[in-house]
Length: 295
Image 1 (spheres, rainbow, N blue to C red):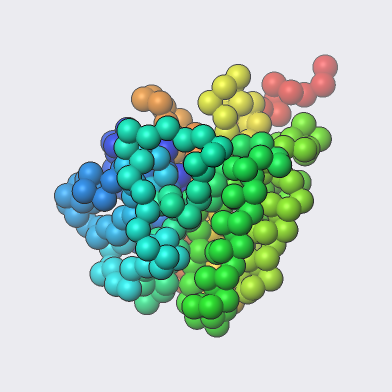
Image 2 (cartoon, rainbow, N blue to C red):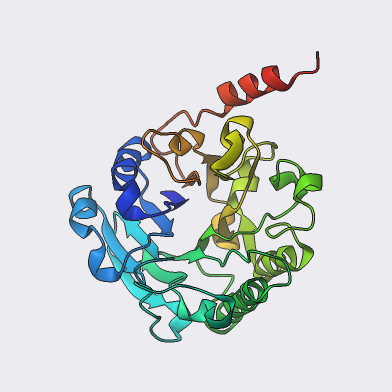
């Protein structure tokens, strides 16, 4: 089984790219984040024609998470089972009304005999702000959901845009990023709490090397300079960890035209290899090394 996660940064804007990528990488299950759609706006027919069922949890203008699968989807849970979320169409967001528990950031379902959880963690914006404190509270709720309703002995994949780097090796320059969101110790401790519960970073099981990221800012040529962060993760429980045979970040999917998502898909294969594709890393890192080599 091939499993992938991708923050598509607007499914409507990126739908042609997603269609091409489904054909290119041929995942069995794709977790998506930041769809920016209400449930009734989801292009289910497009996915159905490509051979996928879809479960979606959205609010309209922002956020939104989904699971697309070649297998039937059952036992859908949204928002940790805590009830409906807002409709964000026509809204503006300020610190005073920010509530991560009233946003479409979590969907879970069973498909292909495995429980999948697609997550879009709050960004946090500025360390110490209400957005940051809300982010930490959201991670606490996620850990409580795992404690109360799930077991590390079950077949479970938890993936998505977690908006935290696991460690300094997952940042292009830890000194430059020091003191900001995505790299702070409280955020990393929240992420480590998920691993302590019984989850393993599937990507690191097969890719110990450095310099491969999943997100690059649109500004200042950061993608071409490879000034990125590994924010998008696929975590698996112990029964699945031994079944991970391959993992990669598809850098090629971060390219346009038209304007791509600022995130790249993360892919892992369980039990047997999926359709081969060139993620583009070797050529890119060679070019970057030549440009930055001391003269």
